[in-house]
Each structure stands twice: as structure tokens, then as C-alpha cells.
Image (cartoon, rainbow, N blue to C red; front, side, top):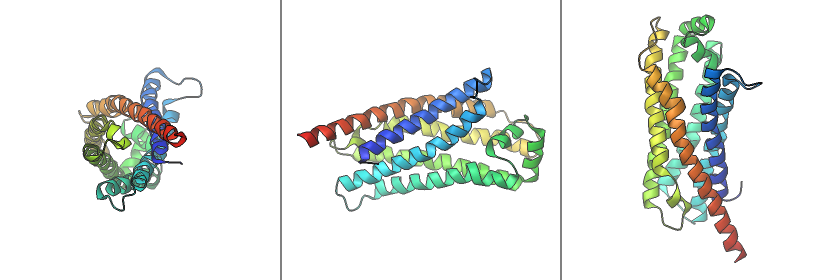
Length: 242
């Protein structure tokens, strides 16, 4: 998909949309469906849309290295392959692992929250698989945070001629860090339910951080990177005409 700036632009579009969709899904969960749109439908869209978005972000960093004619950049290579690993790990825990419990990831969480006793029974029966989902989810969130820490380091080292110098590195880092901590809080609250107990007290704080606060921060970040990508594309076109 074109040069690195174009990939950054479209990655930002998808990731911006993903976080906006999560916020809308929370709203519909509280207010009820809006025509054919429901929180569940939007949840599936959000769970899918960020995968190609992050893949494009990986491609943007890979393309930038080639454009700068660098034969090796270990930091950016780590970012690229880390994002690829995140896509694979996220697809695994979201879509493949839940199949071992006899349900999908949304129904699984609904069951753990008490909305579906039948699914809760399935989760308790397949507790090892559910715990594996939790571990993979935390690992993916932690990896995403670490990768954005690497992006912040790369941002500090980048030359003024690279679009990397304009990425909202600290907004991304704050948003992904909050998302990581929130994931841990949610899992800590759900584990007692899996063992036959009650929902833990950390759930509300984790859910607010994961589904509202982190997406709002990342909305700002991806809007900034979208504008950055657009400006970089325009500058390259202008240079080409010149």
C-alpha cells in the first residue's frame, strides 16, 4: 500500500476507528441497540479492525527503514516484528482459543459477568483454556505497551527528516500503558468467578480504563498520526512535483 507515510495514514484510520467503535459499543451497551447496531456487533468490528491497522503500522515502520536506505535498524526491526507477533497473538486469543471452550470470546465474557449461566458453566468446565485466554490477553496488552515504549525511544532518536519525529509517541505510550494495567485489573476480577466466587472489586476500574479512558487517549494519538501521515504524503507529492 504505497510508501510508509501512506501506510501510517491508513493504519491510523483503522486504529482511530477501532477506538471510536469501542466507545460507541459501551454507549450502546448502556442505551440499547440502535437499529441493526448493537454493542455485540460493534465489539466484533472492533476486535477485528485493529488487526489490519497494527499490521499496516508494522508495514509503515518497515517501509520507513527501506526508504532511509538503512541496511539494519535493530530497534525498528523489533518494532516491526513485535507488531506482527501482536497481530498473531491477538487473533489467537480472540478467535481461536475461545473455540476450545465451546463458545466465542464475547459470549465467554458475558457468561463470566453473569449474563449467560450456560456459557459460565462452559467456562468453568474449560477453565484451563479460559486461563490461557487471560494469559494471552495480558501478554498481548503487555507486548503492545512495550512496543510503544520502543516507539518512544525511536521517536527520541529519529532525525527531523523522518515522519517518526512527529508521531504522538507519549500519547500512544500512555494509552497502551493504561490499557495494559486495565487488562490486568479485569482479569484479576474475573478469575474468582471462574473458580465459583464473586466478581472482584477491580473490575469496574479496569473496564473504565480499558473501554473508555484508554480509547479516548488513543483517539487523540491516532488522530495526530493520521494528520501526520496526511502531511507526509502531501510533502512527498510536492517534492516529487518539484
